[in-house]
Image 1 (cartoon, rainbow, N blue to C red):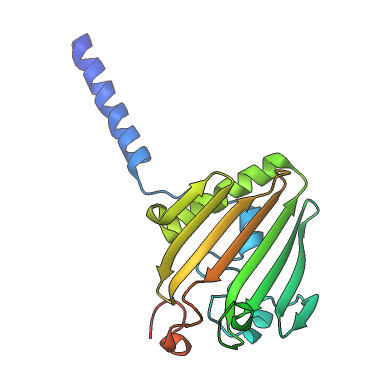
Image 2 (cartoon, rainbow, N blue to C red; image 1 turned 90 degrees about the vertical axis):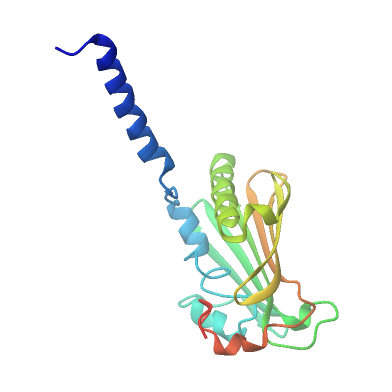
Length: 198
């Protein structure tokens, strides 16, 4: 028969082992349906589109949705993601950047997400913050809750700024992705498949 002390130690060992296995595994919590309806995927800059990509490609990525505005100043989309969530997206070309050379390549993406619930807004904001920390690195983060900025580089662009802002009414989230390399997109961009492979 096992002594009571040995039994407790065995239970503790099993408990600690299970805790270690479940707590230390590199598990990323699943993202909500709303997150995926906003981003579509999590491998591009935003909604299958990359900074530096040709503006005409956005129309292919936003398949089945017509822009509500399209001219030399870029593309504007208005999407109803759910009865409680609407999103306005602006894809702005290089020519919109101060001092930037005239180009039809995307220099900035601005997404404005409007929800009807403060709770849902906070939940989505936290998901986006976690996603950006994972993607752009917590070490590149500045600001405070409600107004974060990531300054970083990715394999397809040498310098970018990503802003995440919570609106004053607590029902609005603004995201802004900006090419900050003074009008110069990486020369080999056309030869990349946007996964970093030549």
